[in-house]
Image 1 (cartoon, one colour):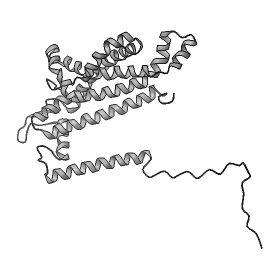
Image 2 (image 1 turned 45 degrees about the vertical axis):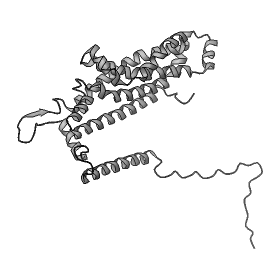
Image 3 (image 1 turned 120 degrees about the horizontal axis):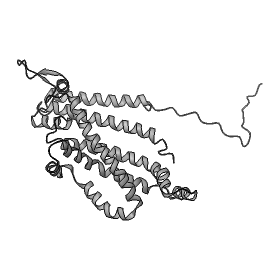
Image 4 (image 1 turned 90 degrees about the vertical axis):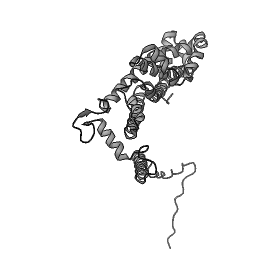
Length: 294
């Protein structure tokens, strides 16, 4: 009669590793993408269903088809109205993509000025205490002001052209970039600075090779926040003489009760903001690969 043998691990031997746990369904990249697409489809279906039942009047909530038609109309040459042979170009004689580019140019100018002046000021305020004591109250005062509070004053100072709009976007982007720079510099570990000084580095070298690289992740976060602020302010900036401009077109469509066109402008503004944020995140991963690794 044969006896069954049982393998016994010798004393001190490591226990066998448990089998890897199975990944839950939908946890991969494609699963998350599919979940987001499914959510989008459900939202559009709900929107279409509400519009089809006319729970809300079409004047206030047009159907997805009407919004799509307004988007196509804004990007093509079309008749003024049925029965009239006159052909017009897009909306307000500009295609929607031209309105979008005009707004992006204004946002780019205001954001670039905020980066050029905000980062050096943040470095100075974080490293020179007297400057911080004097400037910080005014920075907080500017940060707390809503854009509509001074848009009229900017128009009085700089006129109805692009200058007043760029100044408004600059004031919207300047505080978050400056404050993010201050936060980044003050978050630098003192042992890193002391180690560089002990190795013979000058103050300028410490600033260039220690503080700035350590602050870059916070600066990118401030830029991303500033881009969001400028997009929220673009409609306010383009209320007066904002054509061409996607914000001005959205405002004008709302005043004319053209809800389909206004919603299509809103969708374009939102999609563009998401694309810009994704681009900044990729740029950050490329320029600041050490984020979260120190």
